[in-house]
Every structure is written in structure tokens, then in C-alpha cells.
Amino acid sequence: PGQNSLKFKVDDESTLGILEKALLRTIQDIDSEFTQEALKNEYISGSTAIVVLWMNGQILVGNLGDSKALVCSRKTHFD
Image (cartoon, rainbow, N blue to C red; front, side):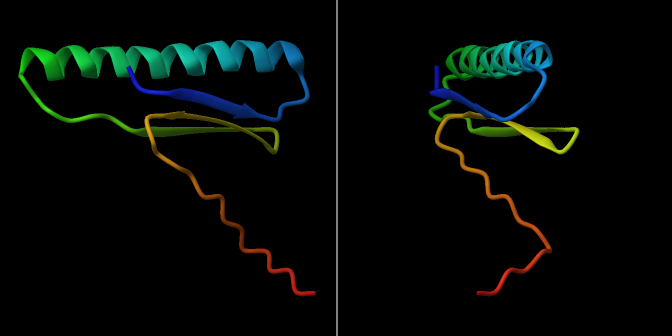
């Protein structure tokens, strides 16, 4: 299985815990299912994914493999 990570910033700890567990479980399930299919079909490949949940202005990000995410905004700041 690939490396899974989770970065988060949500105020409600209870909601955060639920979202964190659900997101990690989903990423692990996707990784496991992909791995099983790849082995069954003799694929030589891997998987990457980025999942972003936006809740009340807060961001919960999960990734699988070596994928990366970039957050962009239309706001421009000049010094």
C-alpha cells in the first residue's frame, strides 16, 4: 500500500475526528482495491490521489502515494 497522510484544520474536534477517520478509511480502501486489481491483472503501476474536503472555510486534505496538491486563490498580496 502507498503512503497515506492527512493534514487538517477544523474547529469542531468531534467533526474533525469523524471526517479524519472517514477520509483515511476511504483512501486505504481505494489503495487496497487498486492493489488487488493490479496484482490480479499483473499491472506494474501505482496509484496516487488527492482528496480535499472544504467545510465551513476549513480544509481537510488526504493524499495517497506521492501526489501533491496546490491551493490557489484569486486574492493577490503585494508587499
